Image (tube, rainbow, N blue to C red):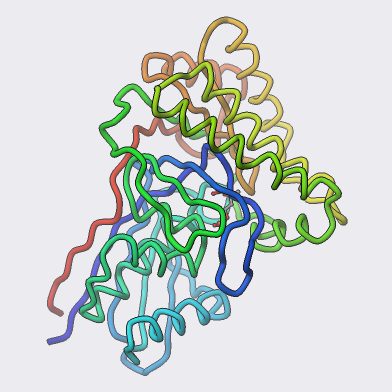
Length: 323
Ligand code: PMV
């Protein structure tokens, strides 16, 4: 019977960043990362068997570059021992390829949808490994709550479920619409090859992740917050010092970094982080989220999209329908 599979997945926001690959073919991360899956933001992916035997991906209604997906589909077919070609349509309820971790939810949803369409039930660990092949951060987005992806690991592991820290929120501030000029894939490789600080980044990463893991287990903002900040700023140090440099920051990104610093000096736990794009995400206690949103709006006025306040969310969810 012909089937359509629908999967939803939420983005995996790294509190402690992965940046750089240990193995480019296998897509293994060079640094450990710790992330939270964001409730309320999601990718919704539908997959069917391709009628004409050619893989096809529609992303927010636009035909996606087949080269970005060819290796992923071939790897998935090899791993599952199938020859199916896939017709996929994927939509995000948040900006795509703009530094909001859309590739994490995108490849997690894609791996789950394609595996389900082939009748496979890989289980979370193997699904995480399949998703990793598309995007290392997607290995984490398979799981809900808080996750760990170790340096060199083939799959992520759940650390704490979505209910573990009910008071945890992330305010997501979309500053710019439109895709980033340099992909994270290219930028991290450039940093590996040319940044004089790349080795320092690797050397510091284990201590940052180890400390953050303990602070997260203790739900301790005063220890976790400074490590969130250290991780993203160290990561950007490798980008600014790449040749040619990579700079995703916009003036409004810097304004919000400074706003968070002012809020912290007033006693608010507002810990911003950034990925490969200008957008700002602010980790904070639930009780402070509204004050932070108001402060962001006062600082910037009109934003290109709504602010989101995200609690820790759940992992991928799969439904199958006959067509
Ligand atoms: O998985 P990718 O290729 O989208 O790279 C993700 C890189 C960062 O978002 C900057 C950090 C992370 O750990 O998600």
